[in-house]
Length: 195
Image 1 (cartoon, rainbow, N blue to C red):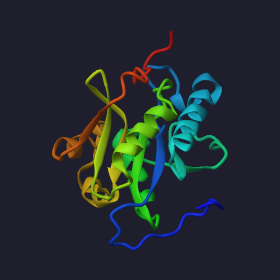
Image 2: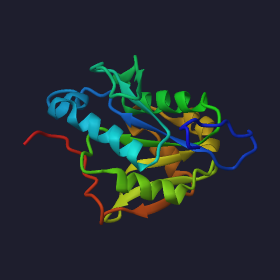
Image 3: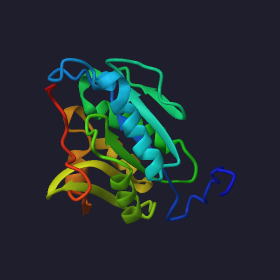
Image 4: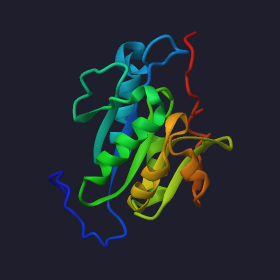
């Protein structure tokens, strides 16, 4: 809508708005610091800006090893059990999204892929069409990466199997996921070490 408000859709609707979450709760052990703090917070700003400019209507950031003021317009999701692995962050994101009316799906990205911009987000969202039943994943030269779109119909079932350092991988492997090549837009590489 022109005024920026989001209307709740009927529960039987097959599409809806897309929420975005930056997964950033980890300690960044190999990096030497929590990546949410990397480059003075520039990676976090870049990730939230990519989600917003790419089409997500509301944005949250998972935090744990370091808790910071979220970027303007983003919600902080403090993950108390962050040390258990990325699965704790993904679970927090899915729970947050499941409480939002009119939601078609959730787009998950990670803070440590600084070259993934709004063009990648936009491509994934265009493929998802905000459909509740869809699963869509960015691939970079054939290598699976982030962002990942999880349609609203999958939130509950995914929550049942998410754990530890594998996040939603087991769930995604057991379902039909549309892979969208984005290697022409970004490397999609996780930055795990400084250098």
